[in-house]
Image (cartoon, rainbow, N blue to C red; front, side, top):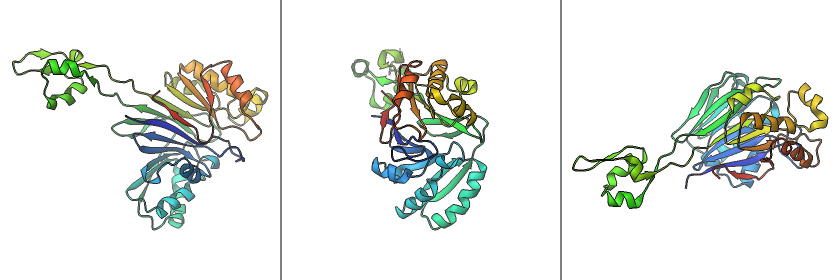
Length: 305
């Protein structure tokens, strides 16, 4: 079965605590791994969650505050020690790419893999695509240039109706074209409509990653209708002024973004170290958007269900 799983490696904010690591997530897309941000401790968390280093090929860095990319030097070194081959692409802002080039000379100068640096900007753009998904950037509202990422599955193929194709004597070689939506023309030239031989494809799923940002109408528009949204919720209601001064969101504001954007599910993260429990943040968010859950290290979400 196709796999689209979200693994939370870290969901804390700038100051690491004994409860939370800084921001890092890994998306498992049909056993290919994409990392979103790479805070300190990412490689240890990756090993703890039994995610294979050899399957990591793309890392997407949302912005250049340290809690979102300081885990990269250690991870790059570990990948070299694992003798990973092939290429690893890091999608990052220009200043980060310049620094990483220097760091890589010392951390993994003789690495057996090719390190590629894809410079991104704040203008919305498609920065990655393969046969299963696309990754687009959206501009966030933060103290430094920052982007969110929207991952969308491409349209899936239709399902073969085994009884119908048997009755119509459809040969095996025609099955792939049926999955792609084409009609079948038999040996007598009779057209058998596709909808008689197949059933609808599974719906494609979308996931938006938004950290760090103030609440933003621009973000609401960009993520409209996504299935899953991860949105920062650094603070609770009592710290709203502090949140805005630091270009962050409260849990209630994150929930309002989810409601206004018409998303299906909301995951909160990027929690301030001031909280010993995030239960009040969850309660505040659920007053606005019921289908809200808290991120936590080790959390795995099946985005297809």
